[in-house]
Amino acid sequence: MVTLEISSTDIRLMQIEGGRVITWASLPVDPSMFKEGVISDPQALSAAVKQLISSSGIREGNVTASVSGLYSVSRIVTVPTPLGVSASREAILGEARGVMPFSEDELYISWQTLAAGEGGQQIVVVGVPRDVIDAEVQALRAAGLNLRILDLKGMALARAVNREQALILNIEPTSFDVIMVVGGIPEIMRTVAWQPGDLSVEDKAEQLVVALELTVGFYNSHHPGSPLDPATPLFITGQMSGDLALMERLQARVEYSIESLAPPLEYPEHLPVSQYAVNMGLALKGTALPKGLGQGGYSLPDINLLPEVYKPWKPSPRQIQVFCAIVVAMVLVFPLYQVTSETIGKTADLEVRYTALYNVLERRQAEIKSREPLQEAINEYHTIVDMGGGITENLRIINSKAEELGIEVEEITYESSRIIVACRADSYATFRDYLVALEESGRFFSPIPPPEGYPYTKAGAISLKPKPAEPAEASE
Image (cartoon, helix red, strand yellow):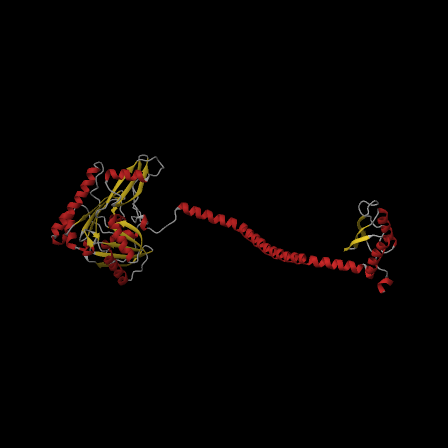
């Protein structure tokens, strides 16, 4: 993990692995990068961050950064809700507007439920100016950092102190923070801009002590039944905590015991803990718990102020459930899919083979159809051949008998295994005599079927079925 604190005077980096501080580094920055405490030149700040990372040897990774409490607001509100029912966004914002008027067009609003009971839910609401967060995120992204978590400095300091009750005075060259921790939660977080450069040590100490007393007095006036315990320890952090003259003067002016900071991390003895208190508090985000919280006490807030628009996409529990259901369904359906795929493949193969066979069959049928006239001619030829060499004799008998009886032969047709003779006579008796003569010739199978209307017809078609030729005749 890499933690990052940015102020209008310097940048502080720290690398932590397994709860142990590995490396830390700082770099002074040009105050002109800021205007009234807000980053005004993200590109210049980005270059400074890159320079610090390169010179310190700190490996880039997931970054947790702090954001100044200047112009930010935070309140603890009670949202009436039925027991076991989460407060809605509308209800939370409605209660928050009653104690901290704000516009969502100007502030990013975040919140976290601290405790729930019959009277409702205790919720801490934090509003940070959009331009403050947008400028810092743009600068860190331009530096190539993977910003995952953004935390308020006051909450990071409360986490580093890790006390149920404490006062924290974080002193920087351009601003100072006063944080009051009660019941393990920062009840009050104030950030004040100041210009201590032209002030004497006495004036600096006086201004800080007055701000501290005003904060405690404000809290006590709103909690007359449980004012702040005078034995509450005071922790002084920030860049100016290294000013020994100022620290001695504060010790003499405040009524609270000043204690040394000892965050629950493993770190070298020579690390200036008070100056890197914000970095260490960022490293403890999500891990440190307040010690000895009394019954009904709060848990330390763990809000990620990074707006959703800047967060990397992460599936919701519902999306994960749907994805798992799809995977299970795919596992169950896969064997059926394999069988179906194989069946479809075999069907497709059969369709190809059927199409090929059908095409061959169509070609064969076309060939057969084209051969039918030839086959008919061949059949007729075989009929004639089967009739033997006596075909000429058959014709002679047909014509000679007709001539003897005065029959007029109109047409002689060979049809398959028959000979059709269309003829005409002068009388039905002559026509009948012609049929008898043809039968008696012995050249045709008898009886010869008479034409329609026989025995009184004088004309018609006579169907004759020639007998096969005798072997002797065939040799002749």
